[in-house]
Structure formats: C-alpha cells, structure tokens
Image (cartoon, rainbow, N blue to C red):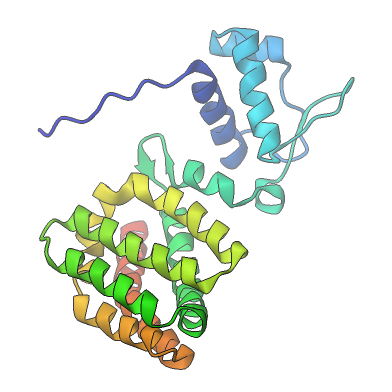
Length: 239
C-alpha cells in the first residue's frame, strides 16, 4: 500500500466542511435558519470560536446570509456561490462528486478552445517556443501524474497569453478543483495527456497566430478524453 502524507486539518476546517455538506446536500435547506453558534458548538463538540471562524468563512463564500441581531440563514449555493467553492465541492468525504466532475469537464471543453483562440491572436512566436519546451518535457515522461502536471503547465501558458482576467480566474478555480484529484484521474486522463502530437498541432496554430485553427485544435485535444470520461461517469451512475 503506498503511503500518503498525513494531513492535519484544523477544527474550523472540519466545521466548515460539515456545515457545507449539510447545505449542499440539502440537510439545511435554502432559506432555513442556521442553528446558533452555541448549538453548533454543542452538537459538534467544539469551541464557539471555532464555529464562529467556520461560519465567517461560509459567509465569505456567500452561502450564508448573516444579519446582525437576527437569524443567520442559508442561501441557495447554486445561485450565490462562486467558483472559489468548486474545490470544496469536487472532493467531499474523500470521494469525487461525479456531478461536479462532469461540470468541470464540460466547462473545460467549452472554455478551452476559446482561450486557445485568444492566445493565438495575442501570443505569437514567443509563446510557441515556451509551449514547445513544455511539450518536450511532457513527452519525456511516462508518469501519468507528471504528464497531467505538464499539461496543466501548458494550459497555464495559454491562459496567460489569452490575457483575460476572467479566464485566468476561471482557470485558477478549475485547477484548484482538479489538482487534488490528479491521482484519481490519472488512468482516465492518460489518453489526453499522452497525445503529444495533438498538443503540437495546437502549439503550431497558436504560434502562427491562427485563432480559428487553434480553436479547432484545442477541441481535438480536449474532446476525446472528455467524451470518454463522461461516458464512464454515466455508466457508473447507471450501475
């Protein structure tokens, strides 16, 4: 059995995750009042300061409506939460949430080609050299996890060249959600991160300053693995 690093989590982290799970799973419905700090501390067996810190963080993610002097109520996370919540939703209780995985893959397939097109229009030959160096490193390793990291580095450069703050923040959130699951996703992502030739076609299109070809090439990089994983998720949910 491969040993894993021991992760020590703070008490507020644990409180945050438990309350988050109740909100996301519907244990506490949108619009319902949250139990008081004192009651939560009693039920969870922790201190009130730990509960207060966790609730402050939940409020920052826009999951709670905190009214001074009144009840703290739960918000509908689907309407109010931002992408910063995504990493917390992808892996809960040590398991991947397949619905969230599907959403990440679908978003990646839609956004990736658009980002590549922008990079082609704004990146130029200098970016081609950087991307080629990254792909050379990808081609030099047989380790599936290392390949994923190299592929992430490739897209990091592409997003930089797209010069879009919104796409950059989206990429940051998607990457933060994706990286904790690298090991679990290694078998299913091997097809995508191993197709160095397809990445090189995309690199050439970006270097040539050809947005239309870059868009198509990016779709060809992302779509096969996306389709395979989505099919596997559907089969898993139906079994």
